[in-house]
Length: 142
Image (cartoon, rainbow, N blue to C red):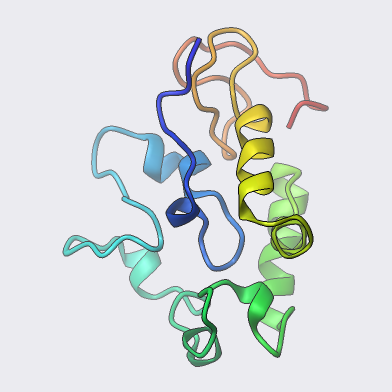
């Protein structure tokens, strides 16, 4: 059982979302290629993203919000609250983990966290079942 998508640093959005777990990235039709991917067919949500287009983010070397002098800003706090409430994932926590333990360690943990225990396929942060085998995930798993 092997993951279909390899999580890489390029798949970590500035806000801490692992684009490799995003439903828009995992779907076949009208697929998004991730927040950091240079793409001519950019989805509207990514094109208008206030975090991705933040002038303070542009000043950071890593292009991650964790390195911004205003971290966590109001927008980041709002997004984090939404993801904690709806998807049981803290984006601020993701970024803090990257800052404390490094990207390599974070990505290794993401593989364990976002692999289906039944078939090994990548899981979506936005669904409570595996997109490949429809295995129902336990709420404490997410």
